[in-house]
Image (cartoon, rainbow over all chains, first blue to last red; front, side):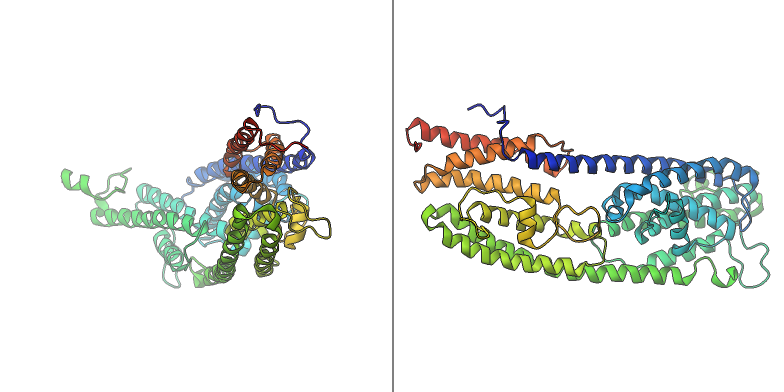
Amino acid sequence: MDHSNPPPSSPFIPMFEAFRAELDEHQDRRERVIKASRDITAASKKIIFSLQRVRKLNAPIPESITRSTAPHWQVIRERFSTISADLQSINGWRYARNITGGIQEFMESLSFQYYLEKQQLITFDNAQGMLKELGGEGRPVELTADDYVLGVFDMVGELMRFAITAMATSGGLPGGESRATAAPRNVLSDLRELRTCLEMLDIPPGPPFPRDVDKKMEVMKTCVEKVENGLYGLVVRGRERPKGWMPDLEGRKEEIESF
Amino acid sequence: MADRHGMVNPGIFEDLQARVDQDTTVRDELKEIIQTLEKQIRTAQSILSRAHSTPTAELPSVVTAAQDAIRHEIDSIKKLAEATAGQPYYKWNGIWTRQMQDATFNVLFCGWLGGFAAGQESKPGRLLTIEETGGIMGVPVNLKDRDAFHLTIEEYLHALISLVDELARLARNSVTLGDYRRPLQISQFIKDLHAGFQILNLKNDALRRRTDGMKYRVKEVEDVVYDLSLRNLVPTD
């Protein structure tokens, strides 16, 4: 009745030793990918943080800011280039759920910077090309359409922050100032256009991508509305705005009380 | 250029929608195949269940019927492979991995009962290796160097645990059928499998939880053997 000691003579041991080697290899790779994903996420967040200091839209990023983002781009480049070996062929999708966090955050910083420079949404092909280049020695990292979309959702939050800060510091929405032709565009009109496109996407339910989209869709809508509310506050109170005044983002309850 | 396009180049979302639609088409096709496969798995399962009430001597007819039923499963698995040919395997395998485990279990149990002897003498108690199982199912196993449909190690291990559960039940039912030899065979077999699982470094996932439950099956069958030996019912030869 002693079952605490398995018989060492089990004929299946060699078979299980082979399984163990395979499973260990899988587990080690999985951990490397997760680690890289975390590093890329952290570096991307720092880039976004610096980019939020930009004030002028549709212009090259000021040198003072590129100086502070450069080392983080370098980290991202280095991490993608080392981890790309673990994401080749069949492993690209096998570890997709482990690297998706990093890639989405990378997409967010990439598309945010692209927007600040060109006032446009970076195309999927363009973004895919950028990521491919980051892979080491001819081993490109694939950007999936899913990660692209999820990254764009996250970028909306950054545009919201950018717009609110700009309104608070300059009293207006950035963008569109120098355009003589066509209807002027600003951050809010761009946000609305993006919102329409994202809402138009018809994604049937089923795990896991649609679940992620559902979650981000709500956040995205809130972001657009925060900018709309901010602009409303700006218009309503117009020039009475004291310097450094921040538009209220959570509705107007407090204003009503203080008036 | 920038002004004419506005914020979003309309091509971007047209392209994304086309990709989503493509995936939906594939997913719908897969779901249909999987529904059929599930039905076939249940059919094979019900035939294999007769092993619990069939005396050992009459087992070959059950095994033959089960093999035929399993061939239908294999047809569906082939369709899954065809429907996703040229697509990334791990993009889709989450959809069918459960059914692959069940189908693999059916093959393993049928093999244990003496099925899929492939020219050799058909005798119960045999463990089909992952390679043999893949051969029977017509799919490669543990693919690493190319991206295609295959049977994974995890799926095979899940099926092994299901086999242990089923054999623990069979050990008791064998006694009911008057076969006092088979519990001994099962006891040794699942002890050996359990010893194999012990050397794996499993992380905290479904496989780990199920593996942890194996020791109870080992003990259940040991208790059956103990009951038999206490009453001098264990065959000696």
